[in-house]
Every structure is written in C-alpha cells, then in structure tokens.
Image (cartoon, rainbow, N blue to C red; front, top):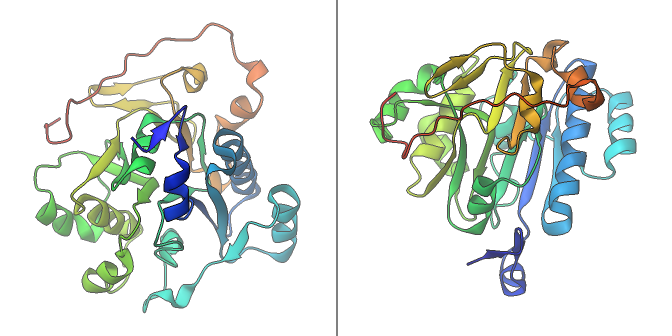
Amino acid sequence: MLIHNGGCYHKIKRRCRAKPLFRWTLGKVYGLGYDICIESVKRARRIWGDEVDYVVVCNNVAQHIMKHLRMNLGDILRFAEPNSLPFYPNSVAWKCYPPRLRLNSHELFIDNDLVLLKRSEYIEKFLSGDYVLYNEDIGRGFADFERLVRSVRPEYKIGLNSGLFGYPPGYDVHTEILKVCTGFRQHLSEQGLVAYLLLRYPNRVGIPMPFVFNDNCGNNYLRTYGGLYRNVHLDNMFMSTLHGYHFIGANRGRHNAWAEFINPRKLTKKFQKVKINRLPDETMLL
C-alpha cells in the first residue's frame, strides 16, 4: 500500500515522485467566488498540510483582487496560459490552460466554488496509484462531446461534474486534447472534453453521489441515483458521509447556502439523516 496512517505516503514514494498538486482555477467572478476560493484553499491546507502542493491558476483577475488573494493565500498564485492550446478558452474552459502543470505527479483540479470538507477515501485512493478521479452527477452535460464520450464508454449511463477531477502521473492529456478538440463551442464543451479524457483511461475512481454535494444556487436539492431529495437541510454538509460542497452558481453573484456554511452556529444541532444511494459499479443503469 502507498497510503497509511490517514493518508501519509511512504518516504520512498516521496523520493521517487513529486508531491501531488491541488490546483484551483479562478477567473473574473463576483466577490463571493473569491471568498469561496480562499476558504477552499485554506480548508484543503488544514486537511492535507504539506503532503501536497497548492496552486491557484488565475485568469482575467484584477490587480487589487490578486493582492487580496496573496494576502490570504500566500505565494501560490500563477497566471493561466491561454497559448498552451491552439484555441482560446470560453468562460469555463480555463481549467484546461494549461492541461497539466505537473505531469510527473497526481494533479487534482478543484473549482474555485467547491470546498473539500474532509479526507475522502476516493481522493486518497486516487492519490495512491495509477487512477483518474471524477465526481459523479445525474446530469450528463457533455455538449458536443457526448458522442465521443459514448464511443469510449457506451455503458456509462450517468454524468459527471468537472468541478472536481484528477489525472495520475504521466497521463499526457495535452496530446489527447489536440487529437480530439478544435475548440470549445458550447458552454459545457469543457465538461464533455474532461469526461472523455477521464473515461477513456483504464483505471478510474468515481466519487459516488452525493458525497460531493453539487448544490445549484443553494436550492438544497440533493440528487442521488434514486431520484431527487427536496428541501434537504444544510446540516447534511456536516454529515460524516459528505466529503465536499460545490456552490454552483456562486460565481454569478449569490448562493443561498454560503451564509449558513460559513457561519455553522446558525445551523440546528440536530442533523437530518438522508439515505445515500450507491451503485455497486459504474456500469449499472439508472
């Protein structure tokens, strides 16, 4: 085993491979998006410490915002590389610029509006070997890459959310992108491309729903394999089974759940229990 004692790597492993890299993508968003990104990085540092390296890849961020980020996060900011691919990114495709920052190590991509809450067994397994990591979701949202995704994994009937995913050491996705992509024509083209790159890889780790809660604009709708749980209390984010919280829509200005998340004392002490439906494997139909 490459992992022991809660996720610490053997010293031999550390000497022969670079540290894993956790990278966030941050562009021109509303103020709430910057606040969530800062919280996300700080929580990840508290969880993984110096076991991994951290970087925030910025694009179109104003100078005064960059100064604010440095004051809160230190010297982990770098600029995106729009010339790393022969076509320009749309608003959500910046996470692919560049496609890899550290090819010789594990690289975990985290949206600026997604916060990891604890060590996840799925992330730890990803970091332990030759796996890609993806976060399962109900909606497919693969845009013009739907056919390409079906060509490599026709049995994969659910979706994934590109707010959290990872590549293993040596996986040269840059070369593969140049083979199959000539540009990001639709809003979700980036998610479709990422889905293709992940699902074509032979060894995969999928985070089952709803361990990372993809909450669209704070509607508190918990989507699972078994259907839709409505009006889920925000207490669920503190359940032992929840590994992360994705504040989808916060970059556009507001999110109903953020105020309660950042001020947990407002929450009730009694947790609402929610049944977590899981599939035994990813090939089963809905």
